[in-house]
Image (tube, rainbow over all chains, first blue to last red; front, side):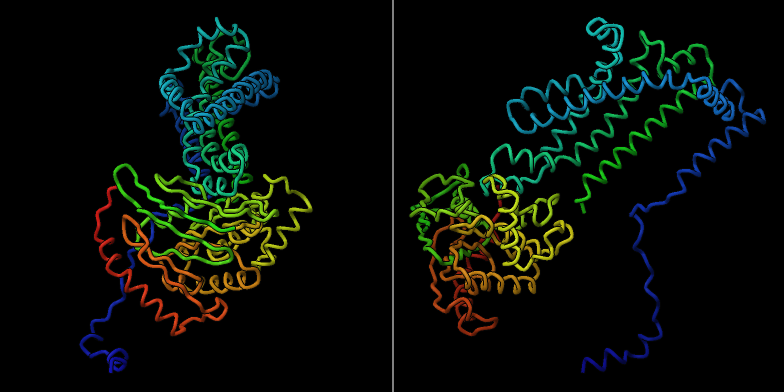
Length: 276
Length: 255
């Protein structure tokens, strides 16, 4: 009986048939490759147009084409590499020191309750200190040349790395650790084969932030006692109100940021391809 | 090797979870533990494997495990507990590495257990590529690799859909028929209990106590889906548990 009712609905119901309106969709980020580039090009085009037409005064913004010319000059004179190489070595040494100490301390905090109880308040206390304020102190402690610069960058990357790392260790699936124990794995094996790989996603996303902070601190580190370096170059341009050079320097830092983020993205794709 | 529980009682703070449980798990048999939720059946399994300590009473190993046994008390977990960053073979090799079994010796064991669980073609796959049933078969292969004296199975099929559950039950039965193993099998699913258990321990609701132990004599291999005798046993178990389950369901949780 019910079959007939299903296949032959009463005439009244048939007349009112309407398509169900769609109300799902959205809330799912999609990949749009070209939009980012278009935004960049559009902004630069507007700046170029405005500065040429005169409705943006030369004091407000330099002409993008002039900034490009400054960069080309820098490259041709070889000065670019004279500035870039000390900056890169400061960045690499400082960030490597800070990140490796940070990961080490973060793992210890994650594993040992005493270390956690002792160091978490300390980390919370030094995290909000503007590291730039400590530069004069670092100059006295580590010397006016490279030492103080390494220390400033290392110190700045250290705290966010620690916080990200112990958070990542805390988030490792406890059932995997129980599994390791139930198969009689040694403590060291559990840490090496379960805790560290399990914490890797959190550590890498923490590194994204700490390395960006390292680039920010590079400029601060070159405030004192640096003849060459991107930071020194920017600061000098700023002091002279030389907007073309200032923007050229800032552009180099931005590119550096993009490169670092891309490298981390590649490392993530390589190390974390097990994630679904 | 047998397992004996003597007067095991446990409480968290003032909250009594189980009371005076004494139980014998004989060699080469599968003992199922069923009971309403919160009766402490998984806790009991953790006591047996030494992952937790009871407040009172003790858990004894009677006799020594065979010499080639790497991990006498071996778990199979409900959530599989596979390392997502290791391949199928890598997950099995994980539990061998600490015993110094590497290279060719490890490969021999891995190949053997993968063949026994019909996973040979998937040795290089990552867990994210596998279905739930396959993941649990990897976990079973991993447990077989250490040659356990007693398998401790904590609701191993509860995370799977009912078709996969049937398939895996058949797999477990054929594994047992080829080489009988000792197992404690915790489940809330009575159909699993009557298919796989040589004896079925029914626990009461919290505080968990043994209400009854049902022995089933039909050989495992002869127990079929929809067997009237098994259905009768299952109904009997359900009658034992029904009121307990209802009362347990209505209880407030303060943990």
